[in-house]
Image (cartoon, rainbow, N blue to C red; front, side, top):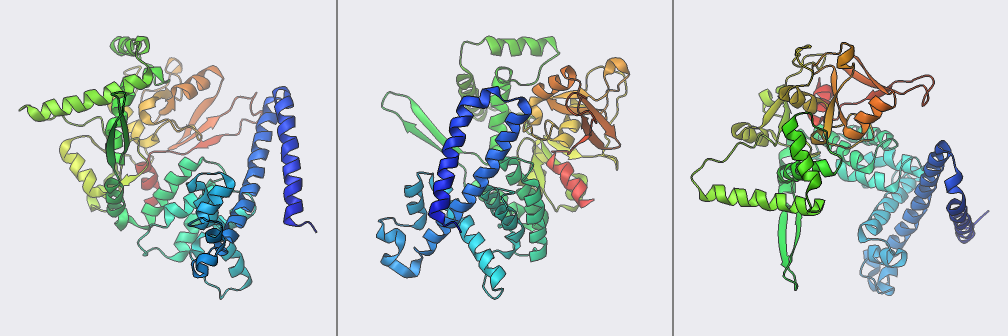
Length: 462
């Protein structure tokens, strides 16, 4: 039976050998093997992370508060076990905290399995912990699931929380950490709709901006934006920089000319972004100093289901942001302009302009953006403002310019679909991506989930 030191020695030897082989042979691997090796390395890393969490949990146990200055961390000169783990591993403070927290939760769950009388802090997290114990998901994913669900009002039953944790653990195998965090917040809102306004206010209370004059005359900016503020700033920066960063292509000659001016501008992309923010602030100051009425903020769209709006209960969403907002915020935006209610029929269809025009209208794009929430390709995180409308049946072949037959794809995936023989098909309100025979000879459809949070809520509460 191997002990931990022997296992660690074997691990170090194997990892060293693996790194040496990868450096010298990785360029010779075919594409599929390359990606398979990447997945295998990620799986191995999850098991190593699991072992690190177990060790960190024991460090925390030997440094528990009742031991006072005789605890392990204190004897080693560290204020907390997390600080000791950080010092030993050379990781960030957030990584050290995660290792201690997840390791401690897994140790409690294991002890509870042996003796059910032992208390466990968050028993509803058991499905996620079980998935991590087999290496199916990472310790980081467990922490994201816990953080997303833990902030409920207490009204949700343990079974409901456990079911949400189980669903998220299943999704964690297929999505990025950022997407998992967004899904956890969505499920939390479904479990605790009454707490949406409180969570929105908490995020708003955390916003800040600090200016630090530098010795060379420059000023450094540090800040944190709540979702509503971020939507305004990000939209301004996107308008100023997206042609440089692979944003959507344009058809209108005026838009093409403006995009080309941005591409040809001598300023760096980062300088364009800063100048856009400065111009936004300057415009605001000048408007406040004049008697002119403030313009409508139609560029910041608030999405909400008609049912939630009529009941004045539920949640809304700011387009391009993943955090929800309260119905009160939705109503405030409705007064100022920029409200986009979801008005789909039972098949998720909105207006239909048939074949009267080649390009989708602005109203249609708003409806499609509200439904799709960005590029529909599963692993893509491009928001609606960075996406183009794709005819699932080409206009030249009889395709209709309507909402049902148009989907959002970012520029990269739009060109990929057209140039590499991928197809998007529709059955009712369900869309699927059909790979070309060279990728999948069977051409198994890949279901495309809508990313628009309001539509997801509409489907979840229907």
